[in-house]
Length: 322
Image (cartoon, rainbow, N blue to C red; front, side):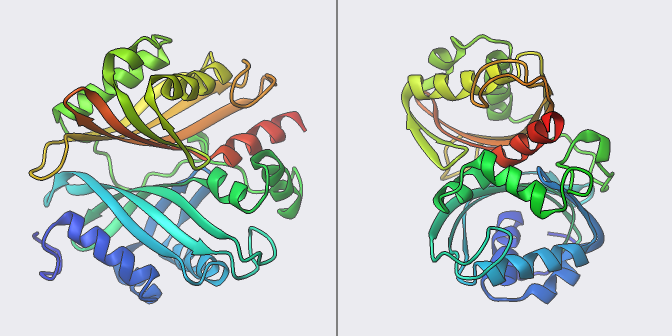
């Protein structure tokens, strides 16, 4: 790859190796090289600008979870050497809550959760990023309800006036990546399914999903089959029935040795005006940042991975309703 260290065979090799080097090999200082000085990192909890903020957050996380491993399940990518690559990297993380930190006093709890990071890379450096951790899975394994965690976080950050606002498009920053993905068929296929579901065509699940599909969903939930897919997507959509669904980035790939697969970054913008996964409607304005991966088999969508941060949604609801 032009502009990249020759030790990296391709983009997935680069992403997987530097992730291990930074986190597990304790090469945190390499973030000064691998991350642009003015990188913009968006997560549902807010926006961080600059690699120094990323370094500080990395050290804090490792102090709380010193044995954390980041197991790269897949890298679904697009782009080229000239305009830059976009890597959608799905990670299965294992960690022990062995230190005090943002999740409270050390509990010794053994955690298992997923992350998807969309990273724009060029010339051996990541310069723009969208990152979602399954915070619902983390806090539940620590014995904390996601809504309660959001309320406690508001208080810990200084209350309504002082607390950090969750990410919304209004606070976004331009980080340099303007691509929208590629034209791969699996990406179009998955986008059509999500657009149908968000238009309340839930019959799309039986049309497009394998009847024996495996689902990895927010909160660390694993589901199987059409009924679990229907319950999840209906619960989300019915909570925000007036929300606008937008696909921001779409990748489809057919690689040797892999199932056809897709990566989509999406959002919902609207109000918490319906009954569903987030309880009684409150009318709160909400932005849901979502990342999804899909794999296809001979009978349709075979495996789906969906991540959004339930605690960030609850934080928006609580801030709007007091």
